[in-house]
Image (tube, rainbow, N blue to C red; front, side):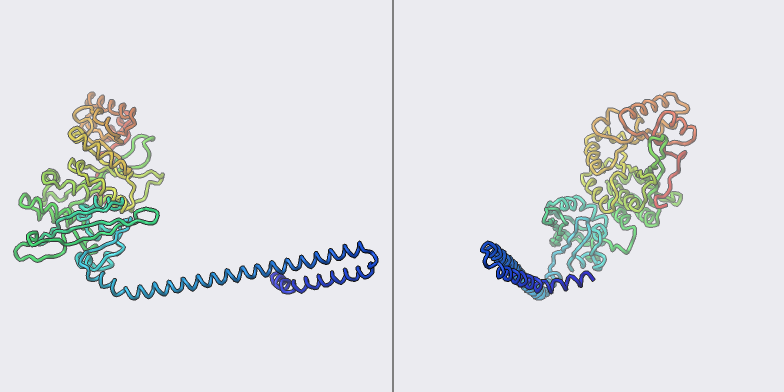
Length: 502
């Protein structure tokens, strides 16, 4: 109702205004007529009449100016719309004209091209890359680069990928081994892409096959095929295990029964276990932590026992592969776990070998893995033995600095086995001391072991380092540990190891 009244008023307002002016003029004329002998009245009324006429003229002039302004704006808007319409038509015509050319380049250019975004997912690929990988488009587009290239190649390229996502162009060459023994040589280039604000949005990865005849070696009867370590993501959920088996088989063939080891992993005998690390003190928090263990099962069927497996892996330089395999699987598993109900996170303690401590590519691999699975670094605590600390203090310090920069923690395991070695940890920050199990095992019967444990506990408490007792076997030992003030306990008296997947 009010809206209708407003519209009606706007329609009749000019008429009302005109009638009001006419009525005012009429009144003034009559007043002048009856007071024609009074010159002062005549002058006053004439002035009022002139003022009214000027006010009306000013209002009409302003309305004409507003109308002209709006007409000009409308004309400019119409002109801009016509210009943008012409630009859109020209762009569509250009795209239509170049579509066949772009398709020709995309399908025939021999260089393998992929666009990787800042999260590591493939947003574009050409036909050459798809044919090289022997994958369908849906198994490349939108998939993480680790799934596209395979875990082994991804791990080997972790440093280059990290540099590209930091905005640095990268050029390198690598040899690609085929299952049949063929070896190809690839030239790879990473070209970072930047947004308007300067942030890295991803990078283009260009790969060229530069294999020369003298570089190409094929076993008798073999034919070239897809690269090793590049797997169809839907063919086998244990592709990461396969990559480790390939590396193991290549280096230990003839030294042991590789077929038995491969069979053990494929049949699930090579697994990750976890053992609970339980808090003993109330101020240590309620979150329960876990040590990650690697196990080979079914030893009674003639398979190589773990005690023989690890020295062999260390001998042939395979421990960095195994450590990365463990980190990858734990991160993947942790990404689907919920935090503790009180908001405190559980940590996973992972032993790292001396070779991994000296591996310059491991921190970059770790960072990419954490980003890929969305797991904070605070969920990981890397264990370093006091023997490695004493023998490789420089490598340990650098390793600790880099992984702590990603939020991870550091623990010294087997602490106190030979001597009280607090002087070895002064050069860098340590979060936990895992006290050697031989000390813990004897604290109820050996006063020297008990005194040694008390000294470690008191010193660790003063410098703000947590303590974890290993090889805790019974309730009496747990009670003594609580009395001394140890923060956490681990052993069969707390919990036996169980598969990580449970």
